[in-house]
Length: 242
Length: 242
DNA sequence: GAGTGGTCTAGACCACCGT
DNA sequence: CGGTGGTCTAGACCACTCA
Image 1 (tube, rainbow over the protein chains, first blue to last red):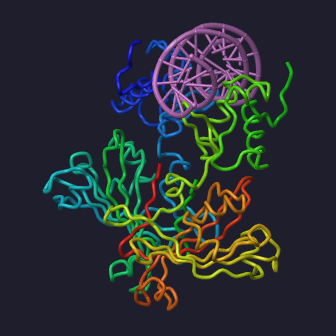
Image 2 (cartoon, rainbow over the protein chains, first blue to last red):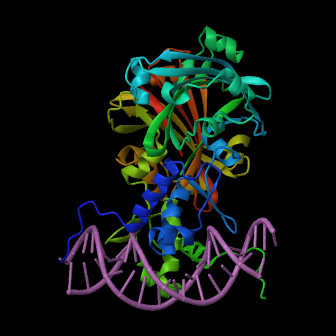
Image 3 (spheres, protein in one colour):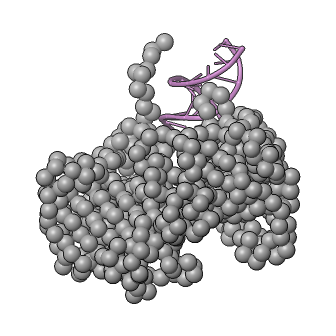
């Protein structure tokens, strides 16, 4: 007889929202251990199975990482598995190469209409722009230009990126408390202009991939706009369809 | 005290294997309704919850499709959701365009070393080669060359593909009983040669995407090797990283 | 209203990890 | 050894679909 509200949401999804909120508030930082399922169950006043289902979904979305016998951890980019989820470039040969990030420039600017739109800012808001190279086996393969919201990344410097042995996203996590959750990429083929030709050591006019990425953090908030130019003479962008 | 075998597999995974086997044997065809969770539970002598967990995983892998109140169905490519999982090309404008497949050629050949290797055949084994165009808004955007194992696709003809209003993969399902489960794609940038330039109505030398796909059916068996040439003047390859 | 998948609970036991 | 996540069960009830 009693009618549920039209926007029915099962209990485990409400629990999921609560855990998500705690993550967003920084109650547990990336890489940290969160309370056990039983603890969370008593905290939220539900059964362990309900907490389990909430965590299951969040683990499937790569927000949490379960480790049997140890506990559940906040996912982090400081982990090879997460790293290759966001860098889809692999050598044609199949060999395993380590990537090295070479920061070139880092400066402040005011957002143009396009950057403002993508990042959810107003035109003229402060942004930070980074240019960097990605090298495989000491050869340049990717030239990135990265646009970041100025309010969050005001303190970012070239030195910071040079000193960091880790990936950029790991740096963003540890220094700025921003964790990238997901991203969309739009890929097109372009011809190398003079700048890209020099950076990537290819002839002008060489076909290259243009990979435009928008990255989102908790709450689907866009926090990075990036255009990567990929040389695909000896590498390719690998994707899984499933 | 009793020690499990070193290759421990939980009950629900064994159930999953049984259901997978039934799918592979064609007990239920793509699009068909499979028995209810309770029926499967009694059939396999386990609880409903165990069957549920097996089906959960298979639904997550896009092998099955759950529909509340109706039942669980064998996934099929005859479904827009599945269709766009395998065609990642979208218009830059964001408008929704319907794709149209235009078969050009279809002939028999013997597998060269590369095709044989990819498709798990012996060199010289029979294969079927298809060339076709994909048009968006009546303009050619993709030129595909498709290599198929001859033993399975011997009966494939150009007429068959012309008559089929559905997608190629839907045709493969209904006429050949082959369902594509997953695929890998390797993307590179190339310059248009004369053939591609004519097919796609672009100037010779225009940068294009080369998308090489290997598609797998049940049991991770490769059953399609495809090279697509994508024109990205007005479209782009869109990918989700998560 | 009957049947389906979806949620929630409670309890038992197992596999894994650190100490 | 104790604590964690992982599995399995049984049962109750809810939401959805279709005849």
